[in-house]
Image (cartoon, rainbow, N blue to C red; front, side, top):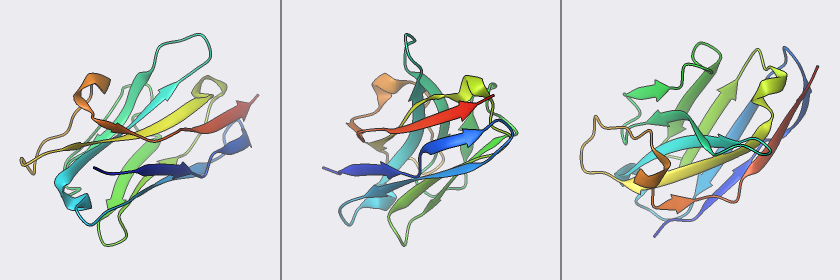
Length: 127
């Protein structure tokens, strides 16, 4: 079992940056593959970025590729999402998610592949 708490959301102008953090409880963070998803008002939750247990392998959705960077600090049990060049269409509630994985090079891009979710943090980008 792992508990996830996101932080770092807020209001930013288009073109600005934010860094989201996701703090994970427990001492087995290195056994979890992690991901970031987002849900805009009136839309389904969608994949943003994912990272393997070791942090070596990452994947991002085409809509954020080149602007968002996912990373993790296993010593601090923390997942990050650095978001640059933000656009109004990035406005959403951002969720971090975790699932156990014994395959170090694996990442997961579907929300039904994840077992644990944070409560979400709001990101609003004004034009």
